[in-house]
Image (cartoon, rainbow, N blue to C red; front, side):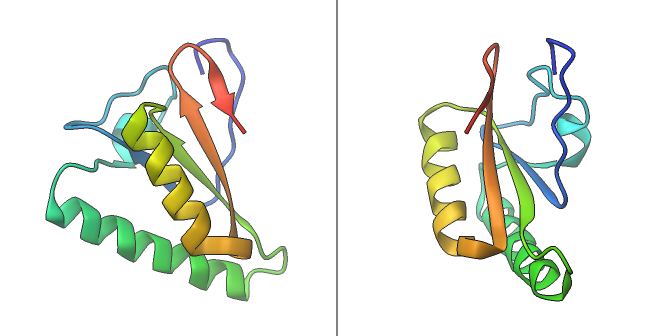
Length: 102
């Protein structure tokens, strides 16, 4: 992140907006699933199924999911992802200039 801290995640980074930006999160631009089209939503749903499947076979269980972008859509998406994945994942919301929101 811009402040030099690191955020580890197991499976998924989602950037909310018309195109992914890194907002100081290295790797976000390359690995993000944007959320601006039906195809993006379908990729996000498939990725969530993958997270749930990984959690079911992982010894540690819970996967870590990062949502990059803390605007209105990012906050709503974080809530939806957390609700759908339940105990399978821990969701972290990464916001520009503020690091992560728990």
